[in-house]
Image (cartoon, rainbow over all chains, first blue to last red; front, top):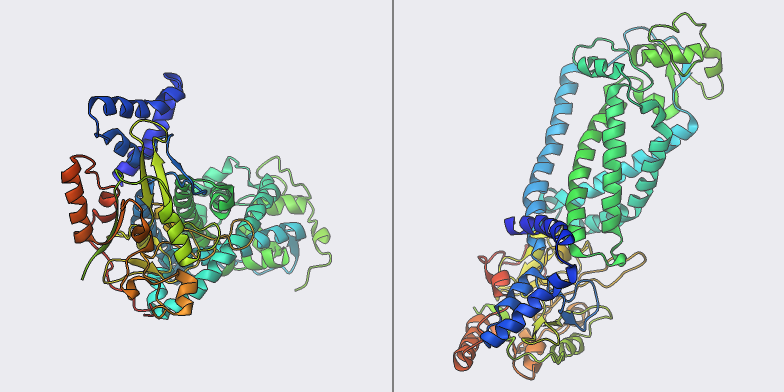
Length: 354
Length: 207
């Protein structure tokens, strides 16, 4: 494992050093020259060749069999990948998911869902337009499919297989692989659309720090005002949807299309990054899904129907509420707008049913 | 019980690719699948060496360790086999294998991988020995007929040895002593350097 690590590091460093000092061609032929010299001095001593076999760096290595890296005799990076995947990512990633689920379960048992403090007014505000909801659910459904199938492929061997047996588990895993491979590109497209659709209202503001400092009132139960999206949602947008979304999409493409003849080392690295990023992604998503369904009363309806009650808007996103009722989306002062006339009529168009 | 191994004598291999052809012919493998290949080192330079390589049937096989559906099993003779009915074609064994042994016939668009195929040490698969189903999926089961792998049997210079590890190691040792050079047993450290693992077939494997 350590040898492999050093090779990954070493390859990068060597490329840097060689790039600045000696021409690359000289470095390529040196091992062959070394062997030629050794052949003269000590006939029958092939140790330079055998070193090359293990390092796989000899450019004069040929084979008649066509394919990816068929001229490589031994690739040692595979063992590094095996150790990382089987003993680091699977173990810690698995427990991370269990821990997150346990924390959410404990929080639910302790605090229960966040309910409205005041009575709903019955007046509705449009929170998510049709396009925004479409993009959200496109990304959400593809994400859940990928998360479930990915978890099956990664942990099924240790959790499902002993229970349901080889034949049935193989069928489920086969289906999971197919779904994962075909839904993956859909999710990548949705990630881009999510970013374009939601980036404007997720730009960080100064008062987000205050929200974070108070933990969003999650534990205290106090009301912390926020824009259309609070700092927690913004963190999910930037770290989860954007950051991890882009990472899993890029690495996913490298793994999904082996027909571009990419080498094994690239796919091993892509796989490890993909697994780590997606496990963090799924862990974060558990929090998002909890808050969006059972965790916050009215949150699911807002994305399902697009509308929220005025009381909900006031209690969860006060600044956004004020801006919306003032008909002014570009809020200028933090405490103004409250006196503006309620413009709920515009929101009381078709689609409002309750 | 004998422990089966491959050994390629780089001092003898003349890169005739007879082993590659013998393998293809014996098992009627599909296009694009090469269970065995010959790699030439320092091609055209002094000290040129050729080596025939396929699945080495490792003692602690990385493919077995990373397979997400646990479709690999090891016979009592140390031969690493797999069940194509369980294989999902994820390609993880290909990432992990040091020797590039696992092969994937393309199955559909975008390089979608089909069921993995690799050298079976001419020992077939989990199906009934010498059955038509076994031949179709894994090729001929020569071990059950009391024969050794076709590649090694066919080798014109007897560079490639396949069989009981103790026997082929003795043959090789005698050669090295006589010629006084070429003692490097290629690939053995990588393949057999770790303690034996998983030498019993999994509960689900049909046999």
